[in-house]
Image (cartoon, rainbow, N blue to C red; front, side, top):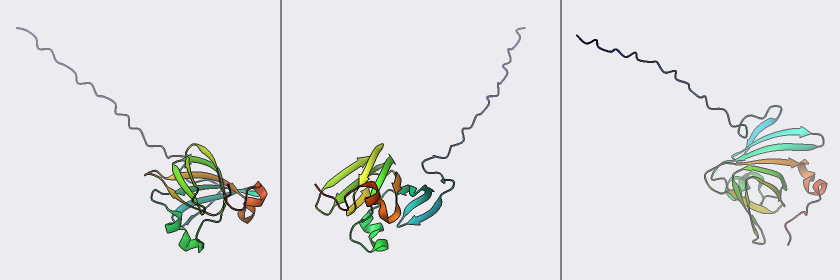
Length: 145
């Protein structure tokens, strides 16, 4: 009589990877957190300056989301910093168009409209001096050619 071979079933160890939080979207420790016109804003002081992490959601358009909040026709704030994720379309009153795509350093003068391009949120790390950003950073007070 032939002996039957028995096979042992080996137990495979299941290793589950836990999704790590995306550091670009995680809560910023030591910062003030708020939402303004659908934009997630985290602000921290660094000397006389502020460091801000701004997250613009897909579909964000300044004219639709911020104009009702600010009451101005265009964004009159200067934006200086590092575009860490996503793509933004900037349009100035004179018709000039500028496209910014991460990773990129940005300097956007006051007097612009802007919107998120595509289905990915835009993450902008910005440096400013509250209402004195233009003067302190030596930027023009409006877009010029």
